[in-house]
Structures are given as structure tokens and as C-alpha cells.
Image (cartoon, rainbow, N blue to C red; front, side, top):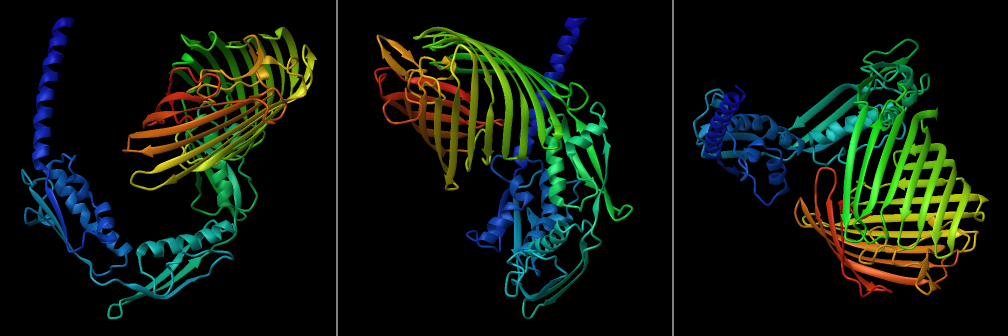
Length: 606
């Protein structure tokens, strides 16, 4: 019986494929040639109209529409193209769309022709209208109107809409949440090709935030959603506060969607009730990752995430990683960690975190086993600025050229992070900066000190057809306090590899003690530059140059060693970020005789 059912499915699949091929061929045959007449092709108006036309999409080279779809697109284009012309200031246009010589409006959509060979959009735009007298009142103090809303400027509907929106936003910023357009008088003088506009706004009363009502939640407690949103109930209405509250809900990670909806009617005592419409995410998530390079070898990672551990959107993430499989980085590294986060713990923008991590690092020049325990707070000033403050305990056993050492540190990790990139994994503009400062008190086996690390990146793009993005990165590190022989071995710096200098072997640059003994340095400087050329929507090429410096001194003074690398890369764009392939060679330093290095990953290198 199972075999018979299987063959039955095969026969139906074959029939479906045949039918699909026939329909595809019919659709391809139905594709029509399109001509737009009446507007010169080299004008901005032509490009704008073509961009707003569904018929242009349906007659593109790679399109395979059915005749019914072509007819539907043509009939929809009457309204779409009319709206485009009105927006450009043409208020007396004549539009005629024909399919094989027949007016598209006269073709029944349910009974289209079997084939359409040619479509023609004929447009007579008529005269261009400009604004005469313009007025909008009353306006809230500080309201900025579009420059186009002025006598002599092109009288586009888009300008009118933007003007009304600016006027309403001005009042809403002052707390008048119900501000609206009360009346409009548009007077056209066709002989003079002038339109006068008189717009009247109704600000309405100044309102305060009313109670926040939550709907749609099942597992996350309502009181916690209200705490996370942090909407300041009782204060004067502010669109910015509303946006911040919505951003906090999205940031919590427990919701697929979170929208704050303003009530249609004013509540008691001039308040505005708000409703939070929530769609919760699945509570658990499991993920895997892999990355490979010729130096670091294969890296495998996995994680398990619970988004709502205790019913208050608390997150627990357990992750494991194996790194250096088959690589030339000394040996295989292992790590296992757990991190707990509770949003809106002390206030709406301050989260609590606690973590535990057990790791073994078998590196080229040192070996370390370590346990980290840490707890602290994370302050989210806005979507681009984050501050952290924690207290931690590190217990480690290390082995390097100075011998074996066991130490225990009490740490105070601090960091400031600014992220103003347009995209995290494929930035084309903006900048990123992070400063990490970790004072440590040695309870045993080391000396007191401070470890600092600074990472700054900037991006600038030129051109539109084949844009080129220039990316720069600078890194600066220092270990202040203990002598080199007394410093925690896993706090010292090395250079070489994918995160510092591509083309150079992994951690190939350190402080040379002689006799083949190398340890990490107390000072580090790294510089990287990339030129990213986008060849197509999917494919890009990259040229890069990296340089690194390691010194025994606490702060950079130039007495250490420098090495550099350069190479080319290939990028293939995906929905989550570009797939990265970089090939680098050493250009200066102790390891210039080494072969090329290959790096593969997701996202740009920085």
C-alpha cells in the first residue's frame, strides 16, 4: 500500500510539473512590449512615472505575467500614474493606456485576451502648476515647514501632504496628540497655472499619557510588559516617549511584534489611553554556527535560548564553542557559558545581567584554563549608545614562557559602546566605537592593574551605480600595572589572524624573549583599511591592508615590533549579511615567508 501511494504521488507530481511548464510558457508568451509616449525618456518625470507603473514591472525582461495580470496592471496604472503626476505638480493630465490598440479600461479583467503583444502608455501631462499664496495656521512654536511650500515652488500634492504632516507633528511634539487638519482650501487658476493653498489646523487640547492597556500577551506577565515599556503615565504626551517605549518592547526580545496604539477618543481629565498590542515570540530557540579559516581552522558553536524564563521576559542563553579544529593556532579551544538577562530591572532603560563562563584556551604561545563569574547592569541610553558596569571574579591557571601561574582576580568591567552604523553586518556609512576598561584587584598570583581596549570604526560610501565603501578601523590596547612577567597571560595582547592582521599567521606577533620564547605584549595597536566595491546587487570585491604593533611597554612608545598584511576578498550578499571570503598575504614583519591565509565567515570583517 505504501508503495502504491508513493507511485500515485509521483504521477501527480509529474502532471503538476507538466501543467506548470505549460502555464509558464503561456505566461512568457503573454509578456508584452511597452512604450511610454508623450514624455521624453531623458527626463526625471519619465523615470518617476516608470518607477510608479505596475505595467512597467509586468513587462520587464524577467517578468512572465499572464494576460489577466497585464490587464489588471494596466487598469491600476490609471490611478497610480495620475497620483504621480499630481505629486509632480501636473493637475490637468490626459492618460490613455492601450493593449494591442484596445483601451485597457474597456477590457473585462475576467475575460482578457489570450495574448498581449504591445502595451502603450500615452501621457499628456499638461501645464506645470506652481504655488501662489500659501498659508497654514495655527502653527506650534518651532515648527519647520517644507521649503517647497512657498510661492513660486512646484505645487505637488506631496508637498501639501508633507506640510500638513509637519504642522500636525509640531503640535504633537507640544503634547497635542489629537492635532488634525480641520479645513483646506485649494484654489486653481488655470490661466496663470497657479494653485493657492489655505490650510487650517485644529490642535486640540494638550493631553497627558493615560493608562497603558496590554493585549495579546499569553506567557509574559502584563505588569512586566508595562515595566519594560516604561511609558510615563500622567506626563504630557510626547511622540518621542511613545517611540522609545515601543523600542524598549522590541529590544526585550520576547515579542515578534509590539505596537503602541493611541486611542481614538480623549480619556478622562485630558488623558490619552494607549494600548500595547503584543505578539509573543516562541519562548525557546536553538542555533548553530560554523566558521573556517586556514589559520584558525574550523570553529563550531551552538546555543540554546529561553526568551521568557520566569514570565517577565527574562532571557537565559547557554552557549558552547569549539575553536581551532584542524588549525595552526596551537590547539583546540573550548568554552561553555551561560548568561541571564532581565530587562527593565532598575528602570525601563537599565537591564541586569549575570554570567558564568568556563573556558580552555590552547593558544600558540600560552595555555589557559579559566572560570569567570560576573554580574552587572547595562544602561541603554538610546538605540545607539550603551553603557555597562559590572563586578566579576576570575580564577585562572595559565602557562607561558614565564612558567605556570595560578591567579584570582576581582574585576570591575566597564564599557561604553556607540553604534551609529547603518547596518551591523554590512555597514556603508556611520561609525562604531567601543571603550572597555577593566580594573582588576589581584587576590592571589598576580599584581593589581587595569586593562583597556579601544575599537573605533568608520564607513563612507561614494557613488550610486557601483558604490565604493571605504572602511577604516583602529584598535588600541594596554595593560597597566603589573610587570610583563606578573601580568595575567590571557590579558596580554597578540597580533595576527582574522581579527587583527589578515595574511599573518594567527597570533604570530608578540614580545620575543629570545630562544624561541614569545609572550603577549602589554601594548597593542591595530590599523585596518578596506575598499569595498559593489559589482552587482549580490556580488562585491574588497581590497584590504592591515597592520599591527605589539610592545612590552604599558603604553605604546614605538619600541615594539610591527607587521602587516594585504589581500583581496569576495562578498556575496544574503538576507542575513554578506558571505565573506578573504585571501591575505604577509607584507612585512617576522613571518613574511609564510604562505597566504584564507578567511571565510558571515558579515564584513569589521
